[in-house]
Amino acid sequence: MPNNRDIEEIEKGWRSVYSIWIAMLIALFFYLIAGLFLRDRVSLSVEESTFEILRYVLYSLSIITIVSISFLRKMILRSGITGIIHEPISDNTAVAKYSTAIIFSLALAETIAVYGLVLFLLGKNTTDLYVLIFLSAATMIYYRPFKEQLIDIVNEREVF
Image (cartoon, rainbow, N blue to C red; front, side, top):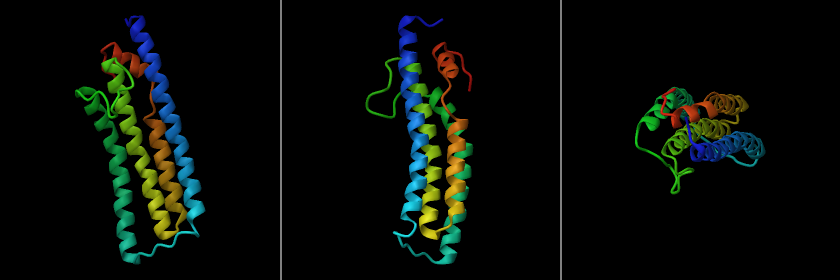
């Protein structure tokens, strides 16, 4: 059972991770707005065959990213990595590991939206933008932070 200090660390870490998750979801909306705003203002030309290859590569990378997030989260939680930023979110190692795993997962999921923005700016196909931003959002929601997981990790129970 966590003591009072652990409970404070869990609450602090939870608020930080949850705020980051919300901010990253909101960022997807800004990618959408930026893409639509830049549609007629940015003119990039790529050969059709090159664009199709890039399109297949980025969609494939998106699928690989979605599949690999689960494995990478487990690897981070089992490793000694406790912070991806200079100062960890928490002094509690379990909270820091969980925060690192969540932030890393969310960052990977957000790259999918960036792929959509790149494809949209190159090909002006709104379907690419919408589909990849939707996949990014769905991935972020699926891999969202759960307070119960954090508590279980602090209690040294593996739930992943």
